[in-house]
Image (cartoon, rainbow, N blue to C red; front, side, top):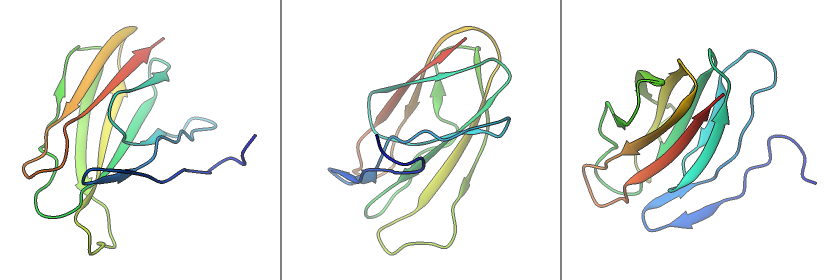
Length: 120
């Protein structure tokens, strides 16, 4: 078992990220984006997904959300900036039970990210 807060680095064609979940207590659930992962969250909690690009471009905001059960709250660039490319943090709220797929499209050559969110 690994210590809380441990995030593996997984290089992925233009994206460096890790799927790590933190979120003890009432603060937002945090995840670093990697394509095609499933996250579970309870109704009323916030979710933050952080994405890092390599090279030019950024992930378009707002992302596509397949269900009204997850609501997009906003996005911002994370500072300090890194030379590789922008790091962005996307915020969502789990509104109602169900399943939603969030699709992040990149304006450059980084891959599209799809995360499935299960709200219970």
